[in-house]
Image 1 (cartoon, rainbow, N blue to C red):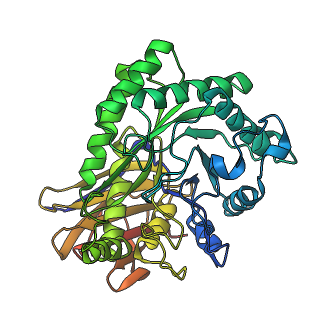
Image 2 (cartoon, rainbow, N blue to C red):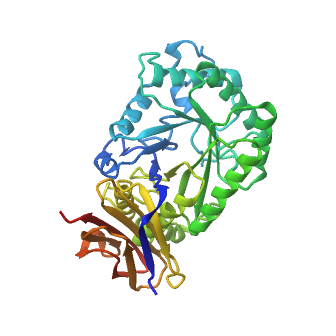
Image 3 (cartoon, rainbow, N blue to C red):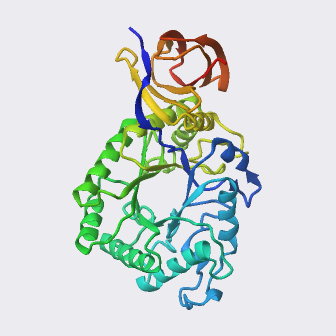
Length: 441
């Protein structure tokens, strides 16, 4: 029995370009710059939260508006300089931006900025003027056309992100979304970047917004896990909760995700340094590359509109794409392989046999008669797998590229296939294989 069967004639819609990341391509004040790699992978969407350039605060409210006693209508009350430069690096990499309005996480004993603002209306007006600066030229600003404006981050986590009550966060969202929509109703406003999307915090937020008829253009949520199917579970849970509250048109954004074999209550504690090292090393390895390929494949059948891997900046612990020097790691090459899949965006049916557990397949076509398939083994059996490519109109040149312990999307095989072709490929237990075929002229 064939392990993987690709049905070239059975189209299923479009492949979603969900290989966005968090944060821009520069670190250490741009000393480390991976812009060329961002461009090569065509990172479509960058969410900004906890950037380290060199500080985590470059886009935070307190950075831009450092003295809350000042007049929010006065451009002199603002310091946009560092944020201006940082955002430009993202735009120069060719990505769109999700701008998180709020503050960065505070791991220190004393919390400085993660408190409810003293004046919600004033805070909301500051947010509006940040939008005016970046979209409408206010205060010697720009016309960047940033559509997505996210209110806060992970208030349901603990006091590291929000010292107030759930109700206070809901009220802050209300003040902010009303102010932004009054300024420009076409902008997309959302939040709240749920750390734990199954907590009652979510139901409370949606109840509050529904009762007050508040718009939620996009809802953002996070999942760190060692099980890709946990992300699937959360995706459907979030969608169901949104729909149940009448937010059927609200976009669902998984805007932080990555591999995590432990949990956040343990990974940072003293004595767990080897647990941390194991986790972060895996994110960069063939294992992390396979986890990433699995998630990007599974998300195609989930009710998710955008996604942002955490993290893209090279110096971040959670960056699986690069090392601290800016050298691409195995997981980066999964992103690069997926970018090539987006060039074959007309998705076609691809089935995996039950006899090939933990193997996942995504396939698509382009307008030139060519096609591609991303085949990921995340803990599958390391063996030869039979692959059927059915319905080819004529002879095609097939190329196979591999990401595994020894390869970084290297060309491993080239052959001519036609008709209903069947061939074999060895899939290591942790690996990503990219197949590309083009008609022979």
